[in-house]
Length: 364
Ligand code: ATP
Ligand code: MG
Image (tube, rainbow, N blue to C red; front, side, top):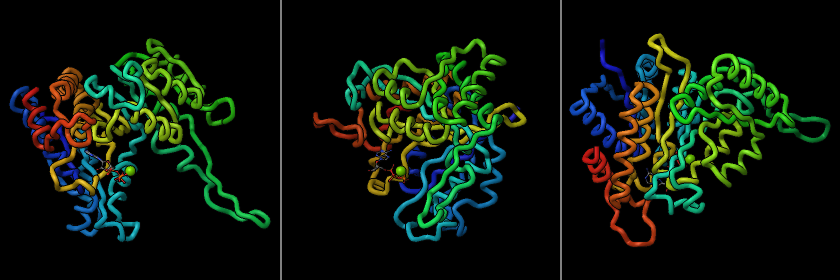
């Protein structure tokens, strides 16, 4: 059997810096755990534009469709701000998401104990927090037609349409139930069925998928406004939250801030299963290219490293190894290591990107 394949797209700004640390970790798994990956590396974003005049070359797109998982750093930067919209670095990432049909966006909010005082909430509310938000990413109000600014009588009207088909709801619900089975076995579905027709259908389809194929998973439903409130009040009541594109956008950003720095947050975007049963998948840190600190060795590599941990768990069925990596991160934080973004008031000297990466490898 051939090794699982991984396409690495470091991108721009701090992307290559944080990805270099992930590569050390991938090498460690190959050397010490006998888990060899077929790794290839390519350009995306501004880096691809500089070489090819396009933020994603067709060959790179084709490669992304073939591999078991794509791992991306970050795209963009001030150098590319004045480019035409059609070749902006971000378009490279959007093309990947669209052509791979990555409809389920997974954003975990996990609070490492050593950082529990970093949250804007009280320690007991966030310590030990480990929840997962599954946001539908390719449909809903951001894509529904009609949309636009129209003239009606003597004034203008701005229109967006929230639109979900049964199959779109069905597939994201399945993604959430599958995830829950690998975690705490609970799903809370959020919509506004009290005021939106799409919400009525959403609730009905999620319940139907549950009853037919996932009766072992505990399912609850919540109105998204009440869900937002509960997420801030007592987030530990949740395991997996599944919601639409718009509500997921808001809820996942809110949940992210329960846990501290942008430099800590991983994500995964999953599509339909491929012939080998693995889902199409792209893993990336939530943060951007951070031009203000790029090239200075200050970037926190943990978000990108935890994105690789998600790849181990969701693409390669290596849940125990993913946990090992998360524990190594937890260990270095408990030992007091901090990149600059994680510094509080007590004057600890920050470690560099490479020092953090090396420490995590040592902890492994
Ligand atoms: P984008 O438009 O690509 O999302 P952005 O400007 O919205 O970019 P980031 O590039 O993520 O956001 O940067 C936001 C702030 O967070 C910056 O001050 C940046 O330095 C900081 N930041 C982001 N990622 C990291 C990281 N991994 N380590 C340290 N600081 C980070
Ligand atoms: Mg941003």
